[in-house]
Length: 334
Image (cartoon, rainbow, N blue to C red; front, side):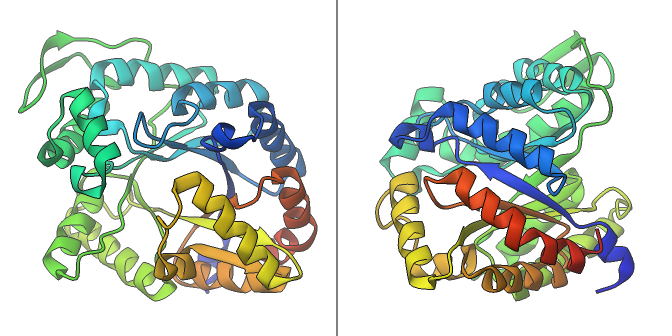
């Protein structure tokens, strides 16, 4: 890894805002973020998002609470799955307000959300919001374009889904907000992967993913960077983040068992395949966790976001700060 690459690596903490449904107190999430910031070891805090398909504390409201409890950490979504379901004018004002109130600390990561084919809960969510599953990606694309426009000037726009004439959204954000596109194609068709990677390069400031092997991460990030250069956007497309599940325990079997139990509660029993778990989870003694994270840093990841797969969020954070972060920061050169 080059010194230049090392200098750009940042570590974030992902708070399980869905876990309040099975016993994790909301106050614990805020306190965990405060502790992460006070340590000086983390640069960002992230929360997940869905509406009714995977209920949780609403993402923008939760980030607003975190903005009030922190001063330095960047505030991000991982990822805003409901973005195609939200009205871009209302959301542009909400997010600009969050950015302004937080002193320009937000990172907006969006995705197309779950398709109706992923299960009845996703089909019901789409139906409740009046969005056909086939509209998710075009709504995502039009929504990103509209946010950029609303945050810079009065907007006249006549698209497939939205129509505006001279609409101005104020206040505007504190600065240009990074928009990151989260996508992890599972189709074996290389054309589908290429379309997805080109969408990142064309519309976003970076890429977010999870459950991806280091080799695939490296290949796809290289693709995105090449397409960005093709579009004349190489200098803009710089963010590459990974959402990684982490459980630190000297007994690897105990760490894995607790992680599976936590993820079964979080996403539904049996939802996470064995193959995805292998890529998605870093578990066991500190050196095993460090080794797995380092493979992704070597692959080009410059923002490693860790979510602890344990009800004991504070305990995991303390173990991470003591036994994992010193080694990771040494590797990252920070």
